[in-house]
Image 1 (cartoon, helix red, strand yellow):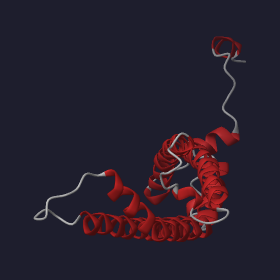
Image 2 (cartoon, helix red, strand yellow):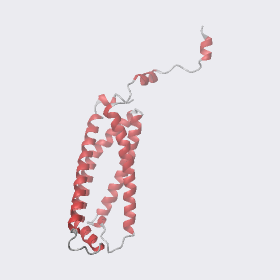
Image 3 (cartoon, helix red, strand yellow):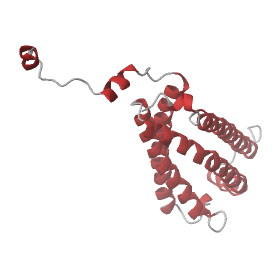
Image 4 (cartoon, one colour):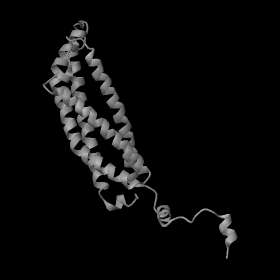
Length: 202
């Protein structure tokens, strides 16, 4: 009998699940990158939600004679608020999925896949909605902005052209970002649907 060694080592032997967990390879490859990016995107999404809410509050105190882009068509204000709220909820799930994923929890992997699948649809709708809003508000914003700036010298740049170019560049950048994010979520959804990726989580 080896009672002395048992008394000197009161800690129980590791369970089978703990030994299996210890032998698993560390999170690597795209799975790890996706978890980190989901945390970053989630934090950025929360910050952008706060920025959007502040912008909406400022609109409430804006001069009634100024153009309000959130009332460009019936229901636009409701849709804008809905998009902001959805982004906020999704951002929270992105952070949660990324954190659980880095901890190699299978719940985190499933959550990342679920969010990526949802964003494949939502990102298309959000990008389309943003482009429509930008297109419809171009004329009124241009007119309102020109009223607020002093008369420009004859030999100076045409501010109407400058504002138009800036707006169209913004729409183009938004489209590019939307396409890139769509491809990222598509690739993430496909990779996290494979057993090879899920096997890194437990």
